[in-house]
Length: 287
Image 1 (cartoon, helix red, strand yellow):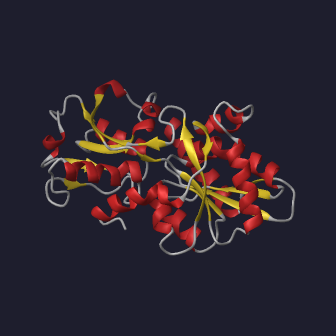
Image 2 (cartoon, one colour):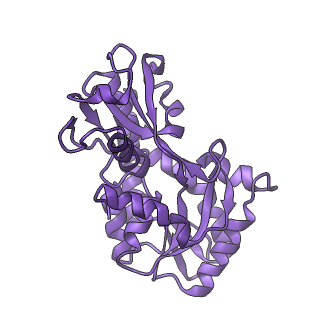
């Protein structure tokens, strides 16, 4: 019953976000804020609704929170001008920047990891997998081909560990969310897989994560940026940027606005901060 309810609720919220928008503010202009859906639509809406309300208040323009159905839909909507601002993993940010002018507004800081994040590779404790080299010949599950901490970072890690990422293991069809990766491993559909480190503890309550273990950690990379596309005028972009940078660590309103999203604040960012990621992404054919 729980799974049926969550699935139905997720479908409803996703449809609502995509068709009519989840909005705040009363001005005539509109800012469409798209969030990359690394978790289900219900969770993403709950996490980012306070931020959408805050940006509407600070910018003076209606802010519509849009939760695309998956990573591909997010990119397609941004490229077609259906989103004015995006919040996505850094890989998608640099990919979008290849096709259109994209302006980084602010860098998200996590409560634990700060302004950098990394991925992990997990397996069942009874799998016999003790090190990365033990993944040879195994079945691996990942989130999406454009998931930074749920695929790309792990591919780099495995390549560095001496594995042929095209031949040494079986890559299962992408399962769309970090939770689904953990479930596939827990249910023995996959032998191992990659998720974002900060999402591991979120699996508690869905499965007994004491049955899982971390086999490897990727390098750290700059965290998710909030960025503006060409459809957002310069004045509005400047107001949004100013509003985001007001949300500093330990700021008076930061916890209330960003706490649901498990963020600690925003800091300044520049496009060059992602140059190392661009180099890494090219190594695995992601750019």
